[in-house]
Amino acid sequence: ITPFTETSGTFVNCEGTVQSVQATVRPLGNSRPGWKLLRVLSEMVGAKDVAFDSSEAVRDAALPAGWEARLGNSANEMAKAAPALSIERIADTPIYQSDTIVRRAASLQKAGLAKIPAAQISPDLAQILKISASGKVKLSQSSTVGQGVCIVDAVVSQSMPMGTVRIPAAQFATAGLGSQLAAISMEKAQ
Image (tube, rainbow, N blue to C red; front, side):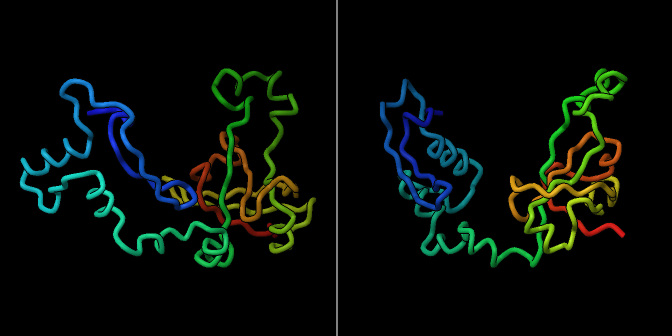
């Protein structure tokens, strides 16, 4: 299969703009563009509707009229499509929790970077949930073993985007939570 420099093609960028490209050099030897190889293999196994004669025909089949309406990638469109309060978890693995050696080093666990985790949220989210900067929040998230729950301090931070909570992974307090980058539920702890 030819590299991208040896074939024409089309892609849709993050703004939803269709961009087509032409090959910059001729294919080397017997190499062929990927779409041609897939067409031949599809014909060999009897697949239908794959007899494309050009990369433009592939583009037209992949991007039928009206496909742009399915993108909805502007902030206003995402806000309309999102539930009333959707919160996304942003997590990292703290440096002194990354492996068994540093987790068991008593001296490292006394360092400031090993402190008990806190949930960082935006001022807007804190206001919506009526959470004070010194309050506690209850986080719950689905994981492979069920519903994980933790209660931690809240920290209001101007650097956090609306609709997100930053809560570290690999901590005893947060071990039961699910994916590091996924939806999470949050409420004021009672």
